[in-house]
Image 1 (cartoon, rainbow, N blue to C red):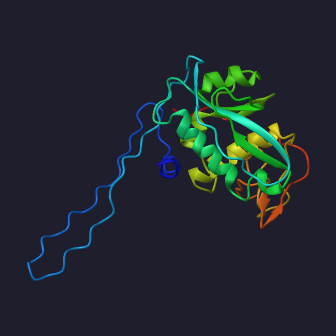
Image 2 (image 1 turned 45 degrees about the horizontal axis):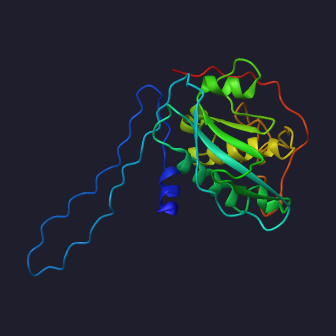
Image 3 (image 1 turned 90 degrees about the vertical axis):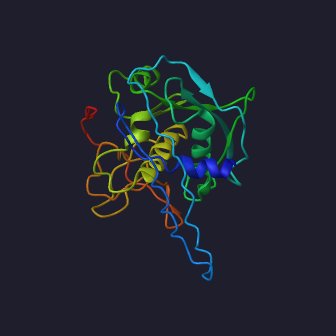
Length: 250
């Protein structure tokens, strides 16, 4: 059931925070067959995918995933993390969001694949090194402590914040699907917690380093959500662009 929940979670589509809607297409009904014909092949079962809805300003209270997880990675420093979802966000709970984060970390192209880190989700009552929050845009500003923004995600000390607006909508013109953007935002903000700073695009048409601020612009690079590309650690020169922060569209 946990694997099924992860697959369903990653199938979320971006929607408007005010009136998003989604319904999975119904499988076509099989036509009646004569008694001498072979039984018709059944179509795939339909699955109702929850729609994520959220207020712009949440109350700042969080629910945390209760179950811990396995260690992801075989070598390197072990860090534990907990996962919280702000109350008022519907369509995704802490367990489902935690499963999605764990699945991203488990990909061999994520940070544990570098051999420098092992990551494990902490359960209730266990110690943890950092927290990943899925937060409303206004609470994002409180947790990040860097002024009015409401658009980007961030890392602040041992706090990693994923803005639910980006989790639901991604960004315009990213050049990859919402799943890839979610992988990027988790890996990018986690990278800051692991001590990595911002990086620059290494050249037109090349993959963007995961530590490039891809949310604000690709600068000729191609969207890339992973710190490992073609089986090797991948990075650009240290630095960041002076890109403005967009205002959230209605």
